[in-house]
Image 1 (cartoon, rainbow, N blue to C red):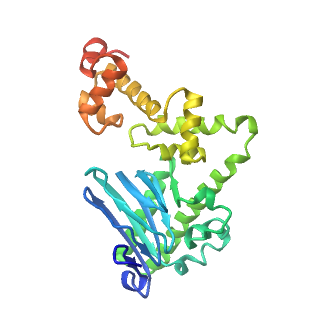
Image 2: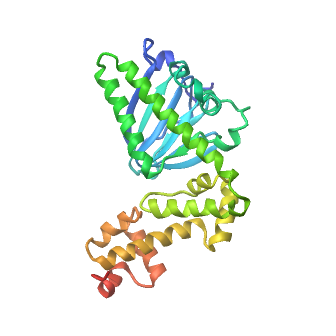
Image 3: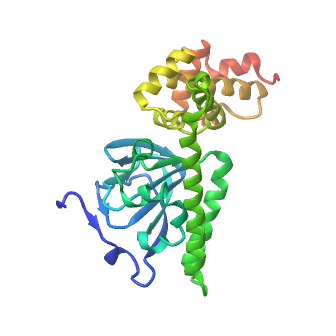
Length: 299
């Protein structure tokens, strides 16, 4: 590996007696170079958004996104336009968890061992999964429990860490299996149902950054084809649909008149007030302040 692509080895990065490490990292400036390591790394996004370069793809990641980076896979994390983000990073060698994961060898092993020959790879080739809101709290509690055990090192902490790590990976396995079963649905619903799921996801998560890749992943489609099909079925581009949902929610909050315009802009997913005002006026013909004067304090 050339000097421009660092190679991290477990013998240097992890404890020999218990080759495992967990840390939280937050930044507005992080810009990792592309690198590889000979151990498994799990990255879970807790807050904010960041960019993850993985297997030739550039992905915008936000809360609920989890990446399982197998040994010898090039990847890097970086901040986006000085936006703050926080991630949990877990490092361990495959052997550490091998016994606990034997029942899941057909789906988890390709993720953990970089098996490009596996027939599932077209589906999971990004090593990326998004947990919905109903699973995020559970995942984050598991990670917190693992970190507490790792930091306090009470008697038996290694066993507790491995149990919780196995729970996390089993949950990942079940989510992948669930998504893999989607194509088996009735042909008449094959195209429409994924789009319904994507739209539900947007309605539930409009306050977060939602890149097109998220929608494509949920629909189990290539991004280009997903973009084409989404516009064909909804009459709008993916970005326009997300924006419309945000503006409709903003209009509802303005009518209630319980928050400031700035607060509402951030609540519905806009990072800059000026962008919110421009977008609102473009969609509604008037500014949020003008809309508030006319329709404020209405149900």
